[in-house]
Length: 539
Image (cartoon, rainbow, N blue to C red):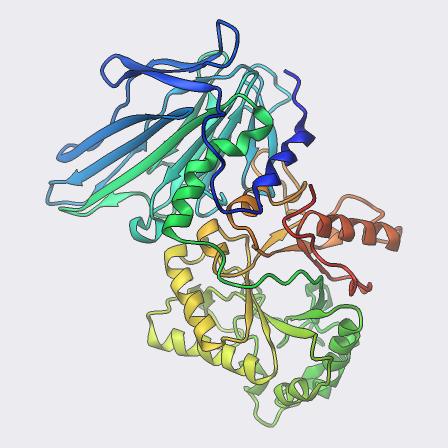
């Protein structure tokens, strides 16, 4: 199967408008009913057109004592399926899956990777050089609860529409081979590890008397390059339920300043301060202010990482939660004046600077002190400790706060989003950015972060996260802001780091990332003041 992957970017012409694309151009239609089975067949081709599935009868598996129904409504280019579950038992039950038809699209097929920026991943059940399957969870890994499978004659989109903030559970979505030439899209609500997959953080459970509904839209389009049209029901639902972005996009590149690194830590320098910082724990914060001033000469935005140092005894705490209050743990110590020195620093009013809040979704009781546990904003002690960190950051003049490890892996998204909104109310003039990459429901509330290079390859061997524009985010949330971490030392390209690094190569890569619509965060001392993210990515 020949497929022009680069042409997929053409779908982003829709990104400027939140309205769904017009219906009627799918090229596929559904016949049949729930009793005899549904068939999805191509109707705009010479006979015989492609048949994606035939005689499929919807099912609603459920535990005993749970009333379960599924209704199927034909729509332009596919089906809308609605499952309804009501628990009539006096005990909590766990739901299993939402069964879908097997799609006959050929082998190999392509599935869009929605963990990173979005690209077509080749899958094959018969070619040992290609992965056989692709699996991820929402909201922990996937940007949205959707899947796209592209074959010889069609692109098929599957979108799950459920209110995450109310349902409060994850879903696993996998694309894997079925019968020869067919591909299964599995929507699983409770699963144990297999094939290297992880357990869902929160399976779908129904309390006694509880009711839950799920809607899944299946859409097929004959124009494979317009695959994103097959997800239009999700965008319509998402905007009607949540709306669009709630912040103003800032396109300026950012200079990141690492004040401490693990390679500098020793008995003599336990916090790992870099030489340019001039040991703030001994000599005060003047060296850090000079680092910030230099960065502000190379950008209009700058962020200080590890502003209070790194922990020495309990290295699992790095980067530390106490990103400001540790300055004043010793009221007469060398770092106690840090907030005043930062506040007194003079910069152009058009510039802004900020601080990186380590382990922002975790809590530990004091500096370099275990245990560390997921942050509970409902706990008065933890909530006040977190707000104390934020308030001192604001008092020091910071107008940007990076929220380190602010992700579903630490605290459920349905808890993080209200907490993030509380932080925004507490500091209305501060721009927050969440790390790791947020799912769509959280990305609409604040900018988010995507590593260009991974720490280690993922389950299907991918080592990069950005291959082009942020396809789904540009389309679903026009005006979104995503930072791209340009950590050159993670790259396998010798021209980007090490003794043979080339400044022009580094700048070329930074410019390319900005042209894809991302805000580059650059930790190398290079001038990025003229670099701005292209609105919505390059076309």
